[in-house]
Image 1 (cartoon, rainbow over the protein chains, first blue to last red):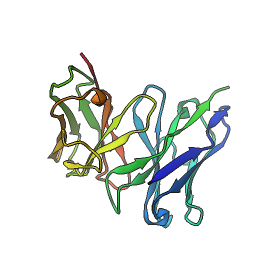
Image 2 (tube, rainbow over the protein chains, first blue to last red):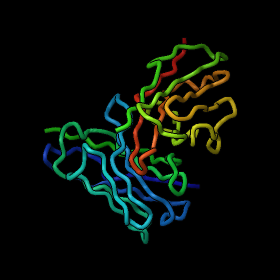
Image 3 (tube, helix red, strand yellow):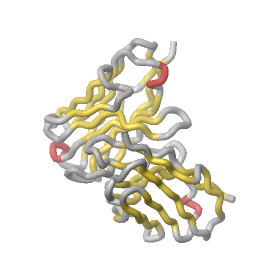
Length: 120
Length: 108
């Protein structure tokens, strides 16, 4: 059974940093691209970042470019999101999600999410 | 940047009725379109990929259609567990993802 479990969320002050992690199991982690998607309270879904299976290709949404860094450790089946210079509008539930397959348009599996609150 | 417009924002229907949700792209996305269902306090769940293919575990009452700029998700007969928010998502410029604003299907 595919499982994605996020951790590392919490309350942080504006300008602060936080590192999210996603522990993956139940599939060959090194074979899939991974993604972070966020959802502000009461709002819709927003793509944050994607990383290819070998980390050779990394992409970010415009709102986090230059502040967030996505990374992965295939030996430890883990995905990370380093978030720096956090702003109030970064407050959201952050989901890690796995691509359905190679070059697939869809995200087939999602974690339960980690809540990040940016507030003074 | 591609924009996905979902309509209506809210659809009020009764169990057993047919639901038709629309997703329109600002430019062609081919068939690189997916549909998700999200219930309160839960992560999104993939229902349909590549515009018309049901994901594993998606009941047959859900169907997707369309290509290019106009897509629809149809629920042939609403079950009580189908009342939720539905999002469309495109990925024509892989790996960038864009989501629509969502359609809430609630009980009339």
